[in-house]
Image (cartoon, rainbow, N blue to C red; front, side, top):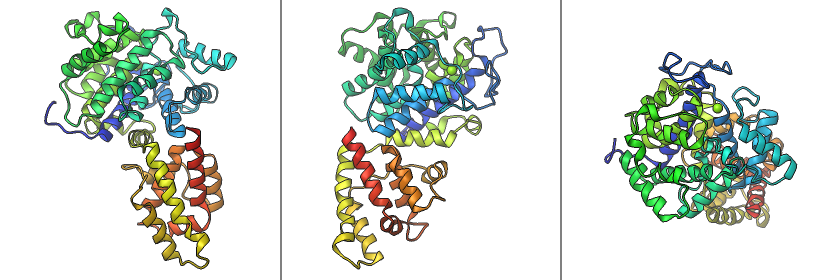
Length: 434
Ligand SMILES: [Mg+2]
């Protein structure tokens, strides 16, 4: 599939995150098993070392969700906030599909322990024996969030995010190369040829930047396309892991075929398939993911919404312009004592119409349900907003605007009860923090 296939950035973004989770849920069944020692997988079936239900995923997806939550909540790449979420996952099971932390890698575990002692969020070991695949397996949210920014910004974000748990140079550069591939895809509506994506663009990229570790550079120079499957290992070593994922991507014709290939390598099967799933999901797009796998995937619509929010997150300047306009729209509350509901709503909508910060493509009803907004009283909504991250504030606004077609008076009620004002205050608070 090349050339004529047109896929939107949003479909590629959904493909990347859902592809990651699908690969994880598929591979965990044969995680830690030696290749050839098991009946090859043909689809999602659960089980494995953690005795999971079909569609349930492991640490790869949990850490991806923690990273995504952090980017959305803070509106920036904040290593402190990221590692604190990893700690909450480890200690309290935040973003776990079972409610508790399991399958945590030793490099991650040591980094989190180091962080609790030193308080330095860049806690990943730089030791050459710590070159695990734990930062690469979760990295896609960085590429989605920064996809429209210049390459150096993306590469820096990838490096910082890796260093929270994985500071070894090959871990960092694997994340950088991988984010570059994802950015290339997110920014191309026409799907490039796979060889062109991995090697032509890969060579361009490694030529531009000095100091590439030879292990990573050789992945981008095309040698892996000549290798036979016997020389491919789906291990926990980041170089082998990335090579295996790229190899499966290159030697398959559909998301499903490549994911099965990656998982059936055994060993660190869930992570090989999760790395594959990010790239292949972005490449083929959301609509090419197997629907019978998606229907079993835990937190399917939540992960989809997270991808939409990351890739469609408004620029800081646009949020600032919106704030100014929205404040102007609300100013009639103070200047006109007896302004009618109709006029107040019209003034607010007119003021903000050209500075819309609604997140396009958000499944706002799903978001409202997940956060329990629907049955909250106005005072409870205000309390909820006071603790909300920036992304959730934007989603709240999106939901309010969208709901006006179905729920008469929703905007005027939120203005009259002070919910809208609190929302603007909270957005402003986050912008000061960035
Ligand atoms: Mg795992």
